Length: 312
Image (cartoon, rainbow, N blue to C red; front, side, top):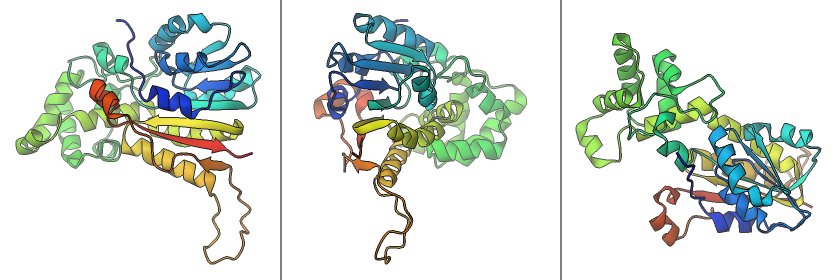
């Protein structure tokens, strides 16, 4: 299947990086290379792009798309959580900009065998990196009921999390849950019909929760932001696109704390904690897609872009 992914907030994200022709930039979620190709078009002969992605199919697609810029581009298959080691391995200290487009790609959703979608029956997988061992099948069949409840409640924000977890445990006592289709039917049975008729697909939140748990998405994001800001040159920017409130909240809070890390009581006349600002939040409110983009790409509707600039 051809790797197709329409980059969200393309112009807004690339503009936010304020590309310097001779700068060094990192695309930590390379995907199909849409954002990266736009960055490369603004680079001069002395510029460089480091593209990182954990998905082998994305790496292959991006390599083809970025072939024109091969002298400026280095592609590495890894999780962006390891970006510092990637830069160290390439002998790069600080960079001029970093871009993250968080979440699942259109290609991953649309490729049935990957098991991300609740709309097609496929093996329960959901791994963004096929080299890892933890799958959605493992979570569904081996996590305890309370663990499942926690995952669905915290990562899916589903008010029926407890009942869904209970139904999953009961179902797997009869036979293992192997496919997305099986899981969808179990979830349907756990949610009152009148509720299903009002909202979106009943399995949407649980599938989101399983995907996040399977790929440790929120932990990786939480643990990476401070380190990425630390590798920016003065004036360099970190731009992050998120797709749901859990991700956006992490980005908003980490950016705010990097801008104002002081922990002194508000009634102290001067700061004594010694924590100094690392820069400024460029986007007081997140940048959202234009009405036109939302109409032409439904998956862009929930996206938000936030930007942080390293201090001089």
